[in-house]
Image (cartoon, rainbow, N blue to C red):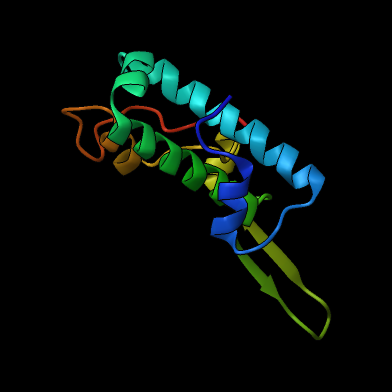
Amino acid sequence: MAIAQPEEVARRLGREFSASETDQAGALLDDIELEISLRVPDFASRLTNDVAFAEVVGLLEVRAVRRVMLNPLGVRQRSDSVDDHTESETLDPSIASSGLYLTDAEWAMLIPGQTAGTVQGSGGYA
């Protein structure tokens, strides 16, 4: 079970979730925490013994899930036309890796000695 809860994601989005959105947010929170736990050395120990670390993990879980909930299709750009009806969408390249991710700067907050841009592979699960 993730540190962050679906209610925290909903609060940051400024709205209440339906039951299905709550379930989805919970699953996504679990997914991103699993990825974090696999990549951060001594994750379980740090989580238990370092309150600040646990708070940062929770915050970053919420940020990652919020990104997905705000833009579930991963649309980076959208164009509409009125006459002759033209629609166009460009998907965000991160969606190819599922859309659930931490940024390099966020990974750097979790892994001591890392700086933004040095953490390899920011993909995740969806």
